[in-house]
Image 1 (cartoon, one colour):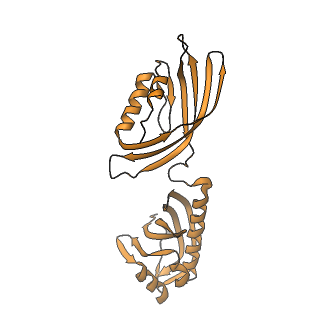
Image 2 (cartoon, one colour):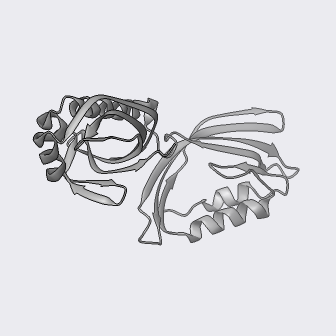
Image 3 (cartoon, helix red, strand yellow):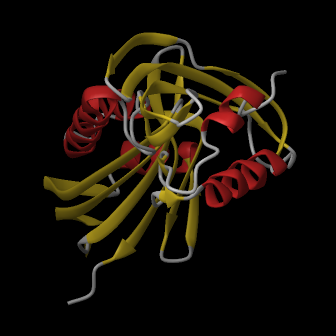
Length: 242
């Protein structure tokens, strides 16, 4: 474990006019505000591994610009919060002081990681969208074998207070309880968190279930990725009332 920020960094922002812009926080002004931010942040952690190597530096008169990269592994004190890793780049503007030392004037840091709930380039979201469409097509075709490829063994279906297991729904499909002509989805939204994802859609189904029209619903599907493939572990549908 290394201290964060290192003692040298603490000295670097010993200026009343320093402006510090870090990830997901408002910009801070003044050394006391910056120090308090770091102290509060460190107080939430039991361990931290941090590095910030310099990749370039330039000096013009009494101004210097330094940039580099950073990586961090954070272990929160709370056992309820998982360990996280992050990394990115930073740039700092230094001013030469009357004693010849250099102090931060402005520091900006960013992260290379995708926004929470998204994957790089939206690749996983696109996969999940296609999966949802293929899953719906399998239901329209009343193909239980194809349909079961999209749901995990522990998949559970919740609908207006009713609960059905994967085996129960598969049995209903095989029995002919469903008569479906079309399945149209809309308002697609996906949030990916590593090997877990939440997908929300609207479902307008033209068809019947045991002789009763199937109402339009909003569907929330919970997915996990296993062996490189997404499978639903839970689905909750709520009727969209006129």
